[in-house]
Length: 183
Image (cartoon, rainbow, N blue to C red):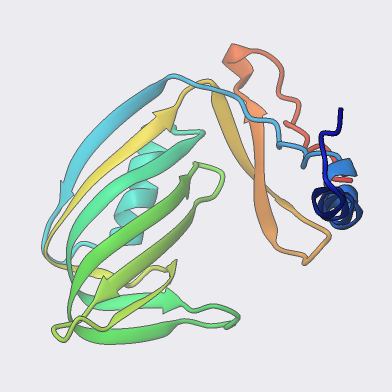
């Protein structure tokens, strides 16, 4: 009884030859992660408020050790961003819609990215810096991850202060959550 004819056998052997190295690889290691209850806050900023300064003040006042920006919509008259691979700020003046504000929040240091669009729909984004002034409103919902603590530590790869996730002291150990090495 034959399962493969000569042509099918040739194709199968070619498949094994080409796909063998891929099939033999170990699956990519999944970085460890920890779950946490989520407490949400909703707030509104008013005309003239500095978006970053108000977020920083809120995080400090509520002692948020680990937070995430869930959503933000609104408008700005000044958008101050650090663009990709640039050392200093770039300041844009006009009327801008906030189309996205994402990132991590912590009393020990936040990392936020802002995207805004102008009246033509042109969109620009980068690191949120002080100096982003609210035009009409900024409607914000942010989340606090009470079982975690976010810290910023120098990553030797590039020398930047990068996120280190720890279990919050009240929830247990403050040991960092280590990433497993990929093979």
